[in-house]
Amino acid sequence: MVASAKSSAKSKASAKSRRTRRTGQRDPLAVRLLKQDHREVEGWFDEYEQLEEDAEKLELFNKIALALKVHTQIEEEIFYPEERGQVEDDMLDEAFVEHDGAKKLIAEIEAMEPNDEFYDAKVKVLGEYIKHHVKEEEQPGGIFAQAKKGDEDLDAMGERLKLRKEQLMAELEPERPH
Image (cartoon, rainbow, N blue to C red; front, side, top):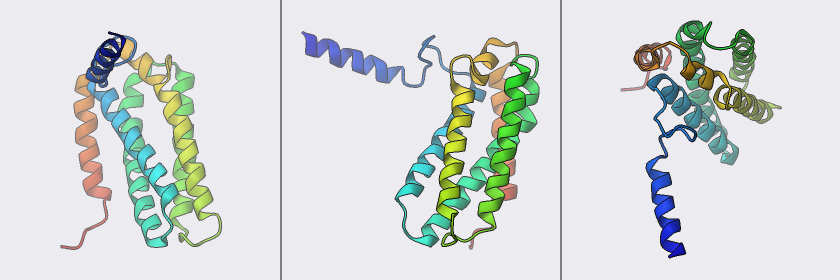
């Protein structure tokens, strides 16, 4: 009986995997999209740690850099300004400063080659920096939690975020050979 109760609890937990822990309700679209970006980049940083070939490191870092540039831009153009007044000003101000720091580190890494001294160290530090920033946004009482309590329609905002992300990816993604 205990085993079946455990498996039943597990299947219920997996059914709720896309739901928030506290309310059992799905996050609004804006928050879901931003969290998806966070998980994707976190996975790439983990993958980077396993690479040894310079060409693979450069290719993966370029994917990370593009994703971070687009993500920070959509947050700065849409999410943060529209959440001003819903989310504590100090938190939003810190998020802008964290974005600025990440952009500077990305630019430093882009100016380097994977075999340069400190290249891997800078990518690792960027990953740690991003992990800290994500925690600030996603923690209870953080930016996303405060945004969900506000008056903004986060599903409609999610549609704007998605559209802007598609536009930026098309603009910023390097041309692929045909």
